[in-house]
Image (cartoon, rainbow, N blue to C red):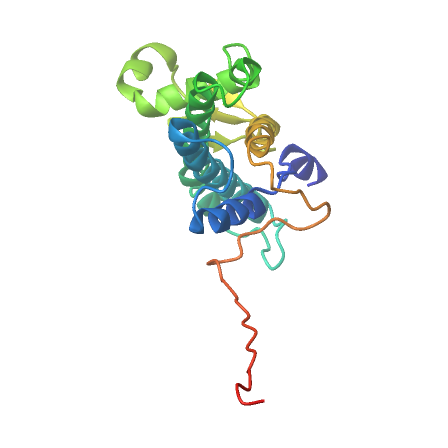
Length: 223
């Protein structure tokens, strides 16, 4: 069981706090630097990066629950739980791909350096996810050339969670966390007012709430 925990790391970034922070600022207009397309790309990136992180954490929870590693779950009906895994992990990969598209757009707008784009080039960790995304989006072409008998037709983790496979493509949970951490770090570099709070748990907190206080001063005009 300890191997499974080691193979399925949690995310070490505060996506939810960043999303709430950016959403709150957006209520009052664009008070952060970046205009035009760069502003729009950053806005979409904040959303899809958080979405990818949420789906990763949901997929991770499914795996841990299936192995009895979540509080209150004895690991029963593990096979049934794992059937839910592809729904979450596929959405994680798709939102990750959209995040990278937005980063490339920000590079073209000179809002991020060219080195940001290079982090997702062919041969990088993200390159493996690009292949999976292409299989998801173009299954007919990929089935005819890239899959051998017995290979999975949907994203499924290995029994020990050492990898996740789709056809002849494999990635790890650690690969996924690495790419999402890279996306987060690039995003925070263009949201300068956001401050990471060390040790604070990063979980969805429901709808935004706005609290206001008003000071009332009574003036006696006759006094």
